[in-house]
Image (cartoon, each protein chain N blue to C red):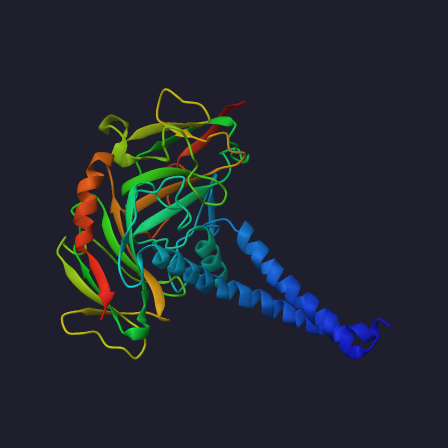
Length: 173
Length: 191
């Protein structure tokens, strides 16, 4: 009787391990896909959405920093590279980071590294090329998020920084 | 029972347990569970391809879009310095020293990773908002009711977590802060 279940039990164990591994590996891609969907539902795809400072009502992403002004550009490279014209804001901390579909950081550049000078990036999928005058950033997959973080050290500074940060733009190339 | 039915039952149960077990382990996984220092847990490979699949899954769930260690370090506490779970009905004294980083902040979240609603709208305390005299040695009260000094409201939540962010660490994110550098979380009393 027990012998009849040995084969099925081995099959169940193998499938269980495979299912565990597949779920763990797929989770980041699924959650990134959901984040891209949520953010693009607010401000569109391949363009920046400039969020207000996070409060208890914020539910777009988990663990938002209430001290940081976030500007996010969810991207889809199906039609071509994503072009970013970045203009660092002279705040105590500014950075642009690009996350691929697996949640890996393809690039992070802060204001100090950029010398607080404007720079141009082209987020490219495999097989795509960056236009002239744009630095190529290669990503896995075709979806992801470009995220600008700006430290708001004093709440009174937010309105001015909110205007300045809108000079950074992203668009489909 | 026919043999194929036995294979079907075991196969189905295997997949169910595999998917359910993975989801459960990701949900209970601590953000930055790679290293524990006192009440704080942290990891250094957020956002990098070197991160294990499990670490990446937990970070995606609990801290999506986290920066790599070269840019920021994240330390998370769900317990006090005595190892007891952080409870919203209790009053805590969090004390720390100046961290070797460009700036830091301490933020209170609910266990799902969202900011906790409170009437004054206070969600964090950070080095940018501290007077220069308090930069080297600072303290924050974490409590449901208003406190006379720097205060992080818990709003009486049953459980909460504290996240310490350290942006642009002086060592480029190569090492962890020591137990002496990280804040202590002392439970004072409970309602």
